[in-house]
Amino acid sequence: MHPDASAAAARRCQEARGIPVPGTVSQRLSDTTGQPARPALARAVVDLAAIAHNTRLLAQHARGELMAVVKADGFGHGAVQVARHALAHGASWLGVACVAEALALRTAGITQPVLAWLYLTREEIEAALAAAVDLSVACVGQLRQVAAAAEATGIPARIHLKIDTGLRRGGAEAADWPQLICVARGFEQRGLLDVHGVWSHLIHADRPTHPDTAGQIRAFDTAVAQAEDAGLRPALRHLANSAAALDAPVTHYDLARAGLGLYGIEPVTGAGFGLRPALTLHTRVLMTRGVAAGKGVCYGHDYTTPAATTLALVPVGFADGLPRAASPGARMWLAGERRPVVGRIAMDQCVLDAGAAAAVGTGDEVIVFGPGHHGEPTVKDWARWAGTSPHEILTGIGPRVLRHYQEAPHTPHHLLEGRTP
Ligand SMILES: *Cc1c(COP(=O)(O)O)cnc(C)c1O
Image (cartoon, rainbow, N blue to C red):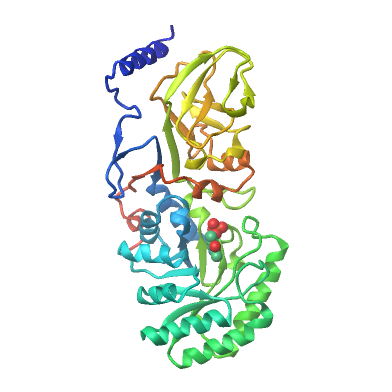
């Protein structure tokens, strides 16, 4: 027997007798977010040094300021942790989708500017004003609601007017823009609000040099000029996302809003800028079994073993963020190799073909995805297997997966870069 296989067998035997084995799933893992330690079958290890590196890289490319977009719990990485690191390494703004996300940053003690762009109710607006959260405004109805909240609370709102330059998602239509800026100027003169920004969003988020971008820039410039003619003095004009921050300087204006790139996923299709993926999703083998050729595996027996092999059960499934649609092509890193996921990915578990000669046993480390430096699958691989985007893979990581933070090196970045603070 292969020495590793006999070690695994000994370990299995030890476990069968109820003897705790170091480094198995029975180990209680502590969390660094202050949550009580709880056993975890899967861990998302976030490399904060990578977040710091990516922030510095994006900030170096951006001509203006950098907004760290930490919506959806920092793309699954933990919004507060990411925000703190991004702010310490070159970002000066934070961006979130909804007001609740902004309030969570304030509750954590973060005082830097935060912009939220999705809200509906008066309660949300008042909470945003009380917490000094900037709001995006895209139509006169919203503007009136914000002004009314400012009047009622006595807290002037700071807003960013959003112009639609072609994405046709949020934002004011060009035809409605003159009225929006005129009403905004009126409220500004009454001291109810300050139009701090004018902004828009790109159509081709992963191809900022697409010909459509030029038209968006023209539409944006027109909207800004109209706002200035109406007497508004927006300090921040912003249009770029991560990909544009790296690859399309003409879109930079005063600030770039970076999401994906912050997390180390190369955002420009077909190009690399030296970003470092920050998140590694770990799990462990729960049990193994030898099977003969011709045996069906998992629901519906979609998969049949072509030859005798060893199957390894891993305790992560679609509730943990592994898309069920990735089942036919997906791989995980086990015992120094990419091993295929066989059969359908279930809610809580799935099965790897560990290979006939596998020296694999309970407790063995499995990497679902990571930076890819050693050959392990990446977030982009999972996105390809599932026919989706890396954003969806990252934000899909479920609440059962414990977030674990590896601290950034303690050397302040200004020393590394020879800058004074
Ligand atoms: C999510 C989001 C971003 C970040 O985009 P990335 O392509 O991930 O950098 C920027 N702006 C808006 C409005 C967003 O919704």
